[in-house]
Length: 114
Length: 110
Image 1: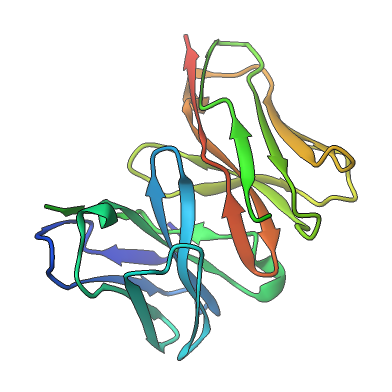
Image 2: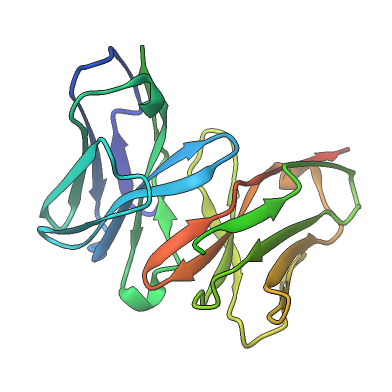
């Protein structure tokens, strides 16, 4: 999967607990994205980053925060997990602004919030 | 404005058939239209893409048809095989953000 590692691959947590998902890339790509995948909704953008410490919101950002302190790492945090955040989370990378449609995806994290 | 509507939700065809998946959009600022293929347990992978100044693009057995005036585009899979069974997503690029359709689950019966 193009040098992208997501961790953990599976997580079960309880409502109200904080959760952090990690995305690590070895491609030195500038852009990193977090998507969630739900049946009937496809993939929806949560947050993205266009450089170290540079991040912006996507279409479903409420309840999520992100951080990028190094080019290779992009963290997604659920401050207080809710059952509606049960989903499969995908990290993706792209090389540049001009190749923003050519995303490389990780293998995903299955998150269950009970 | 930012939506991409994809149909059908699911599709079953016989081996050798030509499944067709359709997508429609409203935002004329979209300027790149990729299709992604996803197998169970994996992340989506770029399959084929087209820009709005082109009406058709072929790569192997996969063809995108693009109708700019109707704001619609579609994916055709020629001589479909059981190995093509997967979920297919159309998408559209706005700036550096990709907006995805809801996905089509394709099953090719042998």
